[in-house]
Length: 81
Image (tube, rainbow, N blue to C red; front, top):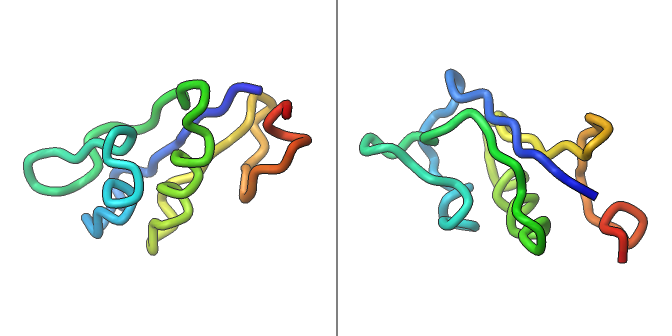
């Protein structure tokens, strides 16, 4: 299953917890705020992407599946394992 990270960039408060959890996925700009508005989750990075999304105290980051459903945890049913 494919996943996408959505980021409400205008409401990012710069806590950078997402980047602390998964710095290779959640890139920050020079001011310490999230640098983009989302990305496709690379295969094998689902757990890291979800951990980064769930670490945001402002809840401006979400991970959705290919049907547009918000993912709150990974299970064999939604990972294809």
